[in-house]
Length: 359
Ligand code: SAH
Ligand code: SF4
Image (tube, rainbow, N blue to C red; front, side):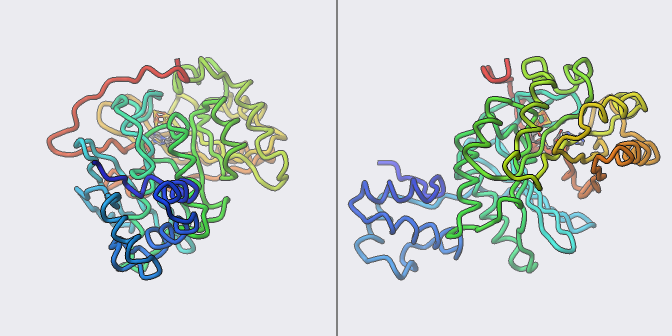
């Protein structure tokens, strides 16, 4: 009989599993605490569990981690791990330390089916969804591996490989564990899901989890967005904007983060800025301009910094809160869109997924 991996469960599912094994539901909370809060993985060390329960856990379950293939430290303190999954594919996780916080950028799929033209993960194609254990496992492992550096994870962003909302069920259960006071206890403002704009799933997410939302906008009109973010053909800008403007309606001080990658002579002209202002003005959004991170074989270039600053100023002059993302970890290919799960010998090229949400 194969053992269940306890990392796959949020509190509710752990409780249900224990009840099925004839135990009271609160044992689930105790287990969640041991694993995620205390980092104890040896059942015999779980001192508030009865001896028979510990034996039962050993017999029926396991705490199964990802394998660490690479652990790289950038000169700017950014740390990147390459984790190997059971079938041999690899995923990447990046930790970005700043003065007052430490952000972990987590992957949700192996590859990505959305196929944005400026993203190396997209170029790689799609292989499969990550399980809850594989997504939360990145947080669990990173938090343990950061202990010697005395660094803590204060923020988690689903901005690694993959489109989180196309792995909805596993992602929302992972969010539960991140927010759970008996696990990581992160506040809803410190956990962000970034999406290319899978509208039905955005609406579901709003009902299911109170986390922060970032949207990969990247273009101010449908014609250009159809090219850069092909899922726009299915979920066009007018519909996307209507979901975004209402997203935090009940919380007037929260805003959706619009991500806009700066591509030289593609989406960074004065006209693009003007169109963007028109699209976003008086909406509950803020903008994050992302300098494009190049990768092999791309034909795009990053806009020069003066152009990015000029673009920012135009938006700010129209009262749209706009920041420029500082690129981190470039020397270890840990920056946005550079994550490809690269390992020698290289991952096999994987084919695109047939997924109804993006067709
Ligand atoms: N699939 C999700 C989350 C992962 S991508 C999404 O698209 O939102 C995280 C962010 O990095 C997105 O805003 C994405 O558009 C951006 N990105 C992708 N490739 C990039 C690149 N080469 N340079 C800079 N940003 C990039
Ligand atoms: Fe997928 Fe996001 Fe990359 Fe687009 S930008 S291909 S949605 S990971």
